[in-house]
Amino acid sequence: MRYETVIGLEIHAQLMTESKMFCSCSTKFGARPNTNICPVCTGQPGVLPVINKKAIELAIKTALALNCKIEPHSVFARKNYFYPDLPKNYQISQYEQPLATGGSIEIEVEGKIKKIGITRVHLEEDAGKLVHKGAERIVGAEESLADYNREGVPLMEIVSEPDIRSPREAAVYTQTLADLLRYLEVCDARMEEGSLRCDANLSIRPAGETKFGVKTEVKNMNSFKAIEKALIAEEKRHIETAEEGGKIIQETRFYDDV
Image (cartoon, rainbow, N blue to C red; front, side, top):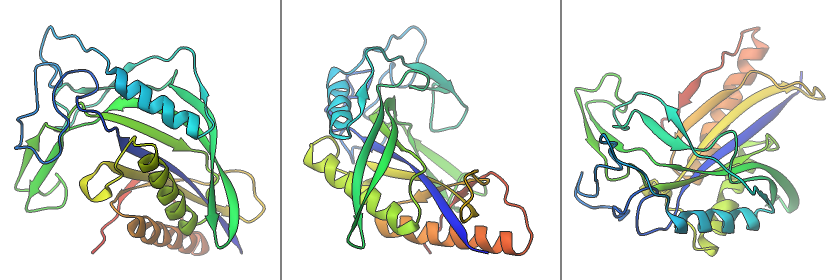
């Protein structure tokens, strides 16, 4: 049986502002741990966030370049979750009423132009960064160190429609978007520094089928090459599971480049 791969991408881009999303702390990369923090970005009692006007302008600039509709009214809300990189235990983000919706971007793959739909562009604040000793992730680590300098840095999320049909297309889409963000001077798109990050949702379905299959989310892809390699591996796993009569479960998986 022939299968069709269906991929949607969520691109997280740190915006090139001098201060954070809701406070005046510096966004400078590489500062000593926990020196660019304040009561606002660490969520101390009684503080009130004030939105960064420059971040709004950069996000609108991007949305216009992606042919999106700028919504006349957008709303920030608290996304509650508990993890050591988020001292407030909530993230200020947008969901029901984002900044912009319904755009597109063209990519070129093997000499052919393809249009990829953009579902939404919205703003949120970044989380802090954890450094684990003795393991790749917090599970199994001897200890984890928290650096909250990144907490509150303006983050723009660009969500694609599930229009991508191969790992190669996914890598080209991300590269094309990174080039656009650099050209607009919105984000420096340095994946090695974490200023551009990519999460992928991948599923397969029989060729000709219109119903979506069960998807898995793939994280920890820190280069354009890693995006393609990770999705090739996940695509292969899905197809082999289907051919063996197995069942794909919806889950989040992390890519190990080693």
